[in-house]
Length: 388
Image (spheres, rainbow, N blue to C red):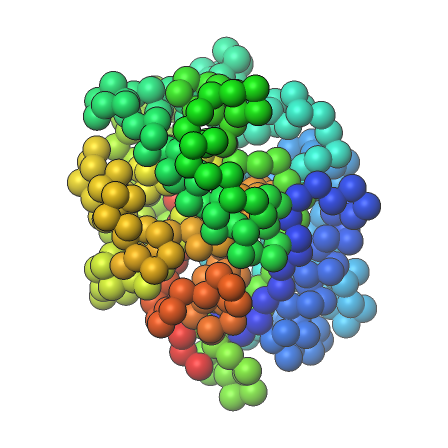
């Protein structure tokens, strides 16, 4: 059995002070079902990607999706959590149910409300997604962790501060064209490449513009067995997908090798019967700009230490051979944890359906999605193509 995306919805990302978690979930759930043309009564299962960890009081929230429509009552609903890859984990769980024959139509929702707590509390919650006894318990934060990773990369391959600034500037320029992006402002290379009062250094060589945003937001997908596509208005097929998990402790891994993402990309591309150069575009997990740089190398676009080449030759820019993060990525779009992986699949599906508006990659026919939990711990790659 095959699985196709037949509908989707996406909320604005950002500081949404007047909107709570329940409203975020309900809004995208209703809109995705309407977009797919699927009666809520026909949904066989619901999967909600959501980290929480203390961002909101609601720790048991899977059935909040049912409140989007009374016809969803009695539908099995499950919350899925895998750190920053919670969204992709929910997508993959729904795909598993369809492929097993247990579901025909599935509703996948990703949502997070992060801005109702203080900045230090956000940092503490996210830090708890590390290997706490060796990392968070000793004051290590995720900016600190990726700052160390960037420092190690610079020590091995030379100073790449300008390379990281080019990634930030590219994604902010792309975000201007994304109507749901949290930051729709072209910051320019010079601003991103300078340390200033407005762009201070955060950790190691990482500046504020090298770090993703704290966000509220939600996204949703309707998935269907490919035997149920007769009435579908559109269908984007999962050609292949792969999940690879690595050890949680940084001390047990060479993070600079990005081995988990590399294995996930390799498995997915092999399963799809294609090479990375066959992709029309990719949405990758740029929680920090160093993560996007390492992703170029993990996906096979460049040799280790040579990711900057793909910026220099224009490959990853709009109009290049393989645009990366045409949506603005997490850097400009925002990173509401549970919503991120679902959002990435929504944006990829839009590209392949030719419905991405000003973000549209011309001639998009095959897309890659990479969503990551932790520092290359939980790694999910999807290869998508247009089926209908």
